[in-house]
Length: 479
Image 1 (cartoon, rainbow, N blue to C red):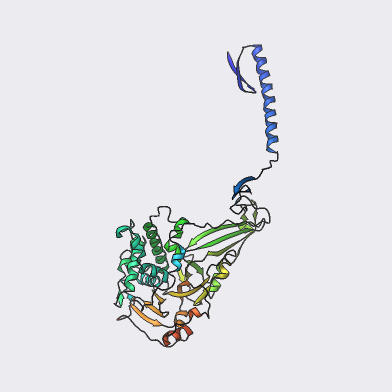
Image 2 (image 1 turned 30 degrees about the horizontal axis):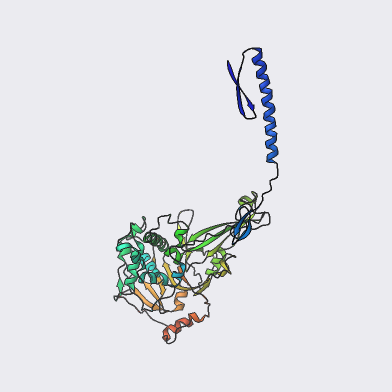
């Protein structure tokens, strides 16, 4: 006895089939019938696949009115997904955060010095620690960070003053350092809170060895960022978009937009990346403006570098461009002075790159953001200089603008007042700019206050009297 199946209208129908001729005839009959049914079923499915389907717009009630909604529409009724039609330009939206960890409005109130103080002390060199000293001086004279630290905001957020579960609470160390800088009556300080924790700040950092100041800055920034997130009990990824609304990203952080535009369908593919500083190539330029122009210059993707568009699916010619999409409160610029050759040897670009006391980045912003009201004017307040042949040798020192508007050279434990002209002639390795809404080269905001000293007036006018070496230390430290 054998079991056979034949499809029926209601499902599978089973029955007994006798062996022999009858069974063979029934078997052939089943095969022919099943084949006819399968063909009919396939024909009906093909007809369904080629049939045009017209969607009826959904409707919803809003304030008593019936509003039509389209599939894939955003909040404003415009398409938020799907492929763009040929000739249509569609951009991915930048992700805004409704509930930031630290509101930008609070940080903007810290942009200006809360009180005018005299210049702080120099920092002792504890054995090739000039890279650390120069960075600490630039950070201590960063107004929003200094005001944040002087208000003890970080320590007040840590419950009971207990240390966070970190190898090194860089923000707490910075807070103590800044408070000491602006309250210390001595001419020098030991930055032992940082030099004694170099291996905790960066696993490859070692006391007694010359390190790259830019690399050290990035490691300290990351440490302060993690400490800030720990203070507010943020338990998601420290590199998430939401994490970028904390204090450190709020002060130093901005966003770059990388846009690739397909020339076949005019589709824009946008990617947004956070930054705490911007590194600029200087080999083929003589000024910071020229370096920014090269940085934001459109790159043509053609030939073997053709771009395969995610919208039209065609591998076609395209253009790629970087722009500043969100301008930071504090703009840190790193000049790429060191480059490696194929033989592994590093060389340094020693030429002077012109930088201005006031910088506008309006022309380097994304076109959609140029009229958005973002502040694009910046005033210089710190310059970091490297002398020597490589990052592993030489010497670092800094120039900072104090709260009284006067420039000072901070060269380890040696401190002296200098002119604007002396600062502007330096071969800068890093530049630090602060947002200055409504300022220009001739802005009243840059003019000295009533009753300012003749020394300060001379600085602002750009003249260069011989100020001499107004030293706050017993001797100049040399490495």
